[in-house]
Figure 1 (cartoon, one colour):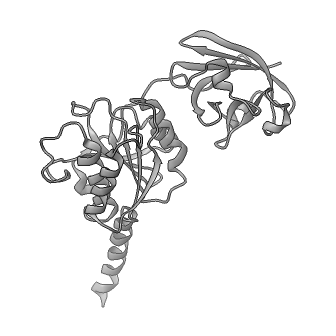
Figure 2: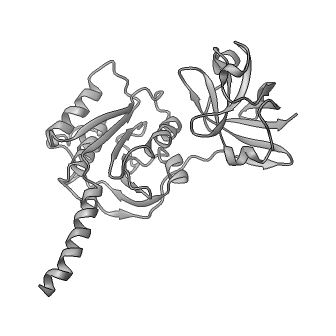
Figure 3: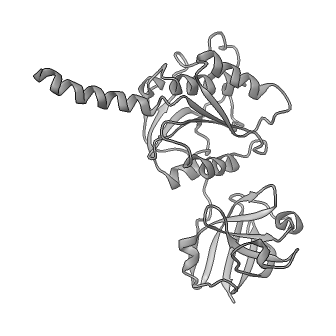
Length: 299
């Protein structure tokens, strides 16, 4: 009985830690689109690992080779999924080269299977990286796929992710441990300097053309702005000014007339800009990413 007294807590702790990686959920993100069978092939591999795997799509419409956007979409989404969820992110212009294939465990308890090419920039900053393991392809690669060098999403990433999610392997069996750091993309982090907020256009709300910055609500609060106050906005691409104008700070789009600009906090509580019932990015030819920056002052 005494042995059981000590063994049972250890068993429960071990079982709990295994379960974190075994909720059977796999979330897929790629730049493949849905025009051909690439995504379907990945899902088929997952089903071949275990019919109990639950597959969900984050997006397959990342612009071709756009590692920055892949990084942001992970950040936008990952924190809303339960611990143990395994994400697969395949935006991989260096497929088949020496970039590392890894599975990271975030400090919030999710896993991401991806090339370590900058895709983890935003997740690392926002949620933290607890562990990194390099995929051992001698163990975690789809059988009879060794001659294929250009579809690691199918042959390595979703195969490994499904095995991890279904409990076929533990996280330790992914491969050797690496230092808990990842490749990141440099960019202008938000700051307040002499009354001017500076930040990056992190992403576009692509369906509507709204411009989302990396300026958080806490950072924005330092300007002491109230609803109805007017902001002066400048937008730059690689340091060249491409837009300048005044916008009222508003609760929501309908607070201004149709076609008029506004500033607001988006669903992630970041300072953003839009045209009511219009497309700000398209109208003013605005993009997003590390080359796009903003300066905001209170008028």
